[in-house]
Amino acid sequence: MIRYLSALALVVSLLSPALAQQPTGTLAKVADSQRFVIGYVPDAPPLSFRDASGQPVGYSIELCKVIADAVKQHLGLDELTVDYVPLELPVKRIEAVVSGTVDIECGASTITLGRREQLDFTLMTLITGASSLSLAKSGIRNNADLNGKSIAVIAGTTTETALQTFLETNNFDAKVVIVTTQKEGLGALDQGKVDAYVSDQTILTGHIIEAEDPSVYRLAPDVFSFEPYGFMVRKDDGEFRLVADRALAQYYRSLRVQRLYHQWFGRYGIPQSPVLKAMYQFQGLPD
Image 1 (cartoon, one colour):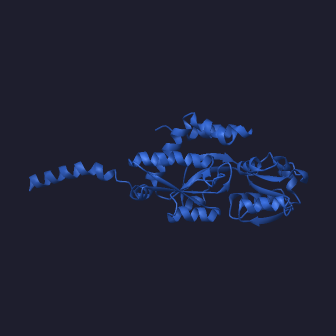
Image 2 (cartoon, rainbow, N blue to C red):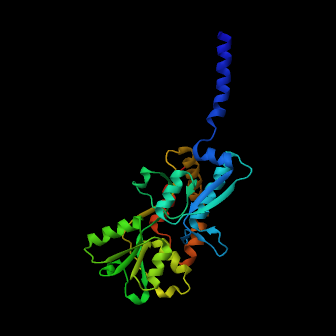
Image 3 (cartoon, rainbow, N blue to C red):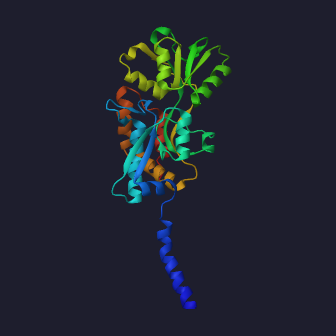
């Protein structure tokens, strides 16, 4: 009996490391299907959008490709198919992550404590703030000029909440027009239905860059909120989040992140803020 128990203990001890290495959660799903599903915002340049051929591109997309490569390496897969699912509405992005429709959401999502009740976030990927975009002929030069104006904002975003707080704090008399997508908000601005459209400053900058005639727009230089971005992942899935965070941290510690920033922001004359430089340093955690 003693010999039997000793032999059994030896077998268990030999098998335990192998059993401990079995992937769980998202990684188990990816290992089984050999597919990694990325949700993204299709109209948020330069973070995530479709190029002329309809392919997802942008700053956030490139960072998620880094994570996809890390997942492939971690699982020891020879092949890994990466699928992209467009998600426009903020609520749909959250639902897609929570339900498992996508494995990660790579767009322009602000990290908030309220959202963390439903899901988790990776390390921060960008820091920006909400501001306003107007037509140059409107005379709106900064956010202080929004008093008495009509302002479009996407429903359910952190920008909507920040805008309401900004207006109330400054006792501004402004009309808030709720829209559902970036396209709708910019269309309302171009058609003169609203005086300004508010969103994260980085996204507004991207739309100016994409415009046929950027000179028709004016972007307010000041911001009225703090927006730390991260990629949404499922809650209580620490193994996958660690793979994603390790990939991002290693990337931030290299010069590649500077080249990435230049590709999507710097070459358009958008300087890297001291806050963002600090974010790259602080989020480049050691292994």
